[in-house]
Length: 253
Ligand SMILES: Cc1cc2nc3c(=O)[nH]c(=O)nc-3n(C[C@H](O)[C@H](O)[C@H](O)COP(=O)(O)O)c2cc1C
Image 1 (cartoon, rainbow, N blue to C red):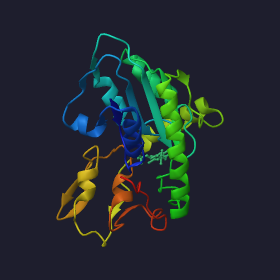
Image 2: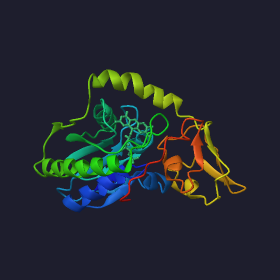
Image 3: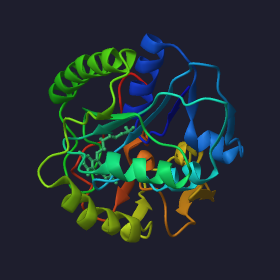
């Protein structure tokens, strides 16, 4: 079973590729939370995977709620792995996730990371099409290597993209994400056609359509940037920064 969370498709793609190579079903964490489905029966010998993006050298806050509620029905220890998708550096996000698992009486057997196109267009420009193609090709190779390592039940910290001072990076940056992810700067411009895709895609129900325009009703969201990156009209902005930043979503999902 592979649990995944994804804003712009990278982690969904990675989860699907792992499932294809390793077998097993995929579970979208935001759907599971929405449906209140947090108890899962595991088959003997089944592996358990988690795939998610790195946010500010940590993990999406939605995972705190999910891991807190998650229950496995099983009599044995299962090989459990985490695959982080990141734009370059993961810091100590794997350790953070492992700590949350242990709070819930589970533990990771191994954790890995894979570099995929960076979707954080609030600060940076979206990658060019050429960069996206190159990056996804390299990511496929990394994912296949991760599959091989999972097959031989590699254990421990197998994250090759932690970057320098991972513990400090996570300790400094992650609280900024946890405190600062406000929706006040999101806005829909005149280009909005009121299709409602942003509302349907939002994993934390932070968006409601009023008079066919999105309103961010929740002060805090997961900050997955699905709304801004996946709007077909590019009608959503985050303050003034994102006007010239382009948009990114995984082309395979
Ligand atoms: C709020 C936010 C913070 C991010 N922080 C990091 C980071 O600390 N390090 C990094 O390498 N990439 C970072 N990224 C980039 C994503 O981790 C990366 O693009 C990921 O593959 C997106 O996955 P998704 O398409 O499944 O949502 C960040 C993206 C977002 C939206």
